[in-house]
Length: 218
Image (cartoon, rainbow, N blue to C red; front, side, top):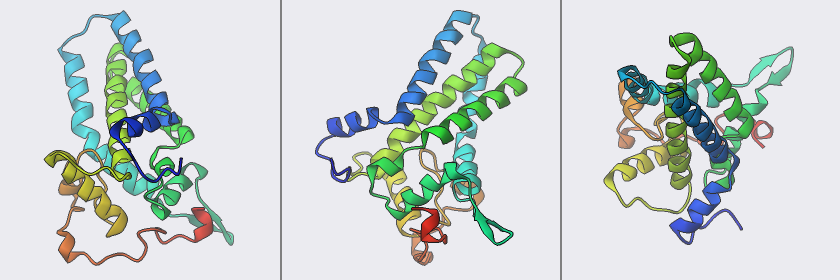
């Protein structure tokens, strides 16, 4: 398989289901969801926590994209340092139409899950509510991976909602890497001023390289 051209949505879904990051998130969702059901005693607070995770998701996407995935390499003592977990995103920008590069690297995903779990366990008053938050994040993560993957294939939008996401993320890769950071929700870009009129933005010469040396993203 070249990883370039799709023949059907069935083939796209099969390829998606074979990747590590969707499988990790699905296992996490089933495991944590089962544990949450076992604990029982759901309440209105569970709905509040789930709603809060959904409400904050656009900001989560924006912050991770801007400050983590697009973090600049650091030069110290004549050497360049960059987190190895993040170099995959540079490769993704170099070749946006490569299917394999559109998925979150498993190590980076596991680090994110651990940090997210620790944050929710410290923030929320009960283990059950933390599980609710993690399950909600897992669902949103699966939606993110599927949406992001489709945008980077030759699949074309068939609904108005997906077309908005498709156009916005394609602008990020082919117009300017400095704008349009949302993938599944665009309110973060609207709120933080990174969703300009495309006609008023010059095409960036560093969309593919992110301004980094080629060896850093190879």
